[in-house]
Structure formats: structure tokens, C-alpha cells
Length: 157
Image 1 (cartoon, rainbow, N blue to C red):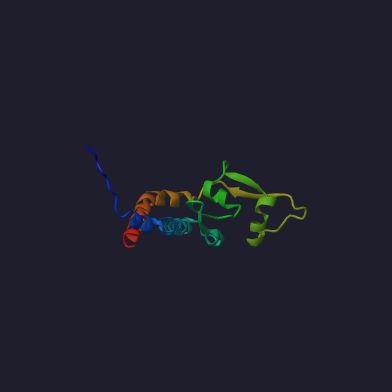
Image 2 (cartoon, rainbow, N blue to C red; image 1 turned 135 degrees about the vertical axis):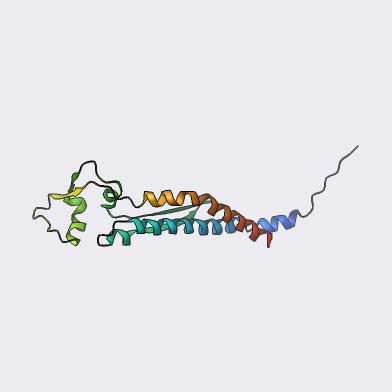
């Protein structure tokens, strides 16, 4: 007794999947961009609004590379971490070398010897973490939609 198995359509299947990595990267990049743009928008809404510099400095970046897509949003402003997390003390001394550029832009006079600093209040005003917490439940469904888009595009070929 012999059993014969024949698989047909292998060439067609291989042709259909030939462009799959590019399609997957494109769709996952789209989903990642949607996620980080939402995070950026919410962070900007929640950022302290004194003069708007912190809000304006919040940006996002999406990077597809070596089989993965990474996304991030945030700010490079030095004082942002103190706004986000607060300080351990009610009055915290921030050395001039860390806060000087910001302080001069906001009307403070630079010390003549370049030493000294500014006392800042320690109350946190989080804007990044609350945005992350709001976005976190949306990540899974967004990437499920990306997988569905990939499958639909591969079927259409």
C-alpha cells in the first residue's frame, strides 16, 4: 500500500509571499506611527502650559530596522524630567549648568561666575506617563488591524 501526496499551487504561494516582508514592515510602521502620534498628542495636551516650550518640544520618531519597528515620543528638554516626576524635596536646587539655558530664556539673570542655580518646586506634573497609560490598551488592537491589513494585501495579489 502506498500513499501519494501532491501539493499544488506552491509556485503561486511563493510568488504571493515574495513581497510579504515589505508589506509587513509598511503596515507595522503605519500602526506604530498611529500609536506614537496619539501618545505625542496626549502628552502635549497634558504638558504644563506655562509658555508652551515643553509642549512644543514633544516629538515622535518611528524607525523600521532589521525586522523590527520601534516608536517613541518625548522631549529632550533637560527640565522635562523634573516636570514629569517632580523632585524629592519641596524645594529642589537645580544647578545652573543644567537649567541655565532655560532660565535665561525665561527671564532669569545668569550668575556672573556661572555657578549657582535655581530652586524649583517638587510637585510632579506628569505628561508622558499618563499618555503612555492611555495608549497602552490601544496597542494590541492597532497591531491586530495591521495583521488584518497584511493578510488582505497578500490575498489580493
